[in-house]
Length: 152
Ligand SMILES: C[S@@+](CC[C@H](N)C(=O)[O-])C[C@H]1O[C@@H](n2cnc3c(N)ncnc32)[C@H](O)[C@@H]1O
Image (tube, rainbow, N blue to C red):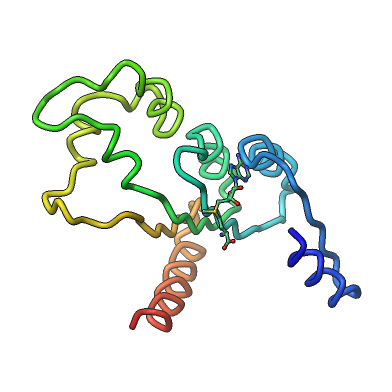
């Protein structure tokens, strides 16, 4: 937060606002307040199980936001059963909050398991909420350019 405040102070001619709030409360409100012509890029880098499905859904519904999400997939893999076993009751609530309670069906859980036991710990997603083919095409091009620049 201190670093963000420094950026803000350095660019005092720009309209920059900083907020220190629970993202699961802030993001749905932020989406709700977007006006017709507003557009936004959101970057989420959640810690462990902190990001809730109810925070992602309003981003998707906004049709105004491009999202970068660094998702700790290893957390879900640790909590989900292998070989047809049932989800442990103590993890059901947390998992449901993360992926949406209605998604706790078996097929979703199975697709969460990569074959490689040394699979990735994080997945870096780019998602476009706009339905406009033009906007989606442009966003796809920009995101690919960014990833190509940083893929070594
Ligand atoms: C993986 S770290 C992100 C690190 C950050 N991207 C950086 O480069 O410094 C996750 C951060 O989210 C914060 N956090 C945890 N739960 C949160 C929540 N519900 N809302 C907002 N931030 C949260 C944690 O305090 C932690 O600083």
